[in-house]
Image 1: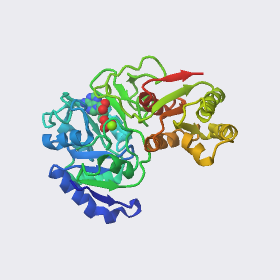
Image 2: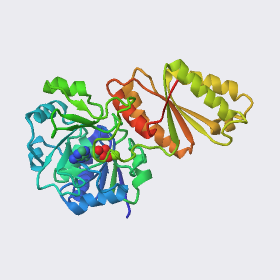
Image 3: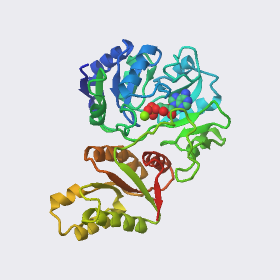
Length: 372
Ligand code: AMP
Ligand code: MG
């Protein structure tokens, strides 16, 4: 299949109506369209047609029991696909939709089992992105859209990430620039009591509780706790994984830097991982500790050789969790392309969106954490 590539300039979004109409028509005809959202890029198809949502699973190489999220553009469309909607859902929709919150309800008979991976529940979200909302409206109102990556790879936050995974496998890719949040939505199960967060995202438990005035539970708990057994269907799959082995280092930041500097020293010495390249994810606060070590330990190497052996990427300031979230998947994908064999990363404070950052990082690391 030949994939059509379009780019939409958000400053002149009115000029994009022809692209949005074509995207909508493609979806109504059962095709696949990739579009940006504020979280990550989505791979969209008509959620109410079985053959259309089957195509999503095929293009992504996604196991058929890993359910899709249905994206809507109007709150009044919710009862078409969901039953027994609690009042709290309307309070949350009023506050957080459009936005990075997915809610799970019992599904109506209009939703095919393929879309929900065989479950009797359905996940629904209204994205906060003019392009996404335009595609959904033009596409008939109900668009199943998981992240637009090959299953198991980090989610795409730029159109070039999508093209790397899905060029030739989808009808259309719409480039709308970088995703602002960069991590997938918070998923809240509204079919249980108390309501339960199945996946942390930009909207935290505290933000939800403040609106509904009741407690919500988080099944995965804090990422660094032992209790990290998957509870949501689909979460049993190894998600967000880079090609390299990712190792997280937890502890006081100075000690973390010392530990990783030892690994740099090893990589650059003859007795180390000869020929192998290591990647380092560094906050701005720690990055200069690594550059000092690189200068010291690498002084006897050619600079090209040095760059081949150790690659340090700055992910953002530790005080700016949103910035770190927005850079995470891009950095993991860059390390994939650079073929590093191991990536070391410090851990980040588990507050606000930091909980979601650590959820994705610990999964990508296969829960391997070294405490120093
Ligand atoms: P993605 O859109 O790629 O982030 O994947 C959607 C994720 O939403 C799935 O992997 C599930 O974890 C979750 N999900 C979707 N529908 C349901 C549902 N009905 N019940 C529980 N989790 C769901
Ligand atoms: Mg995904």
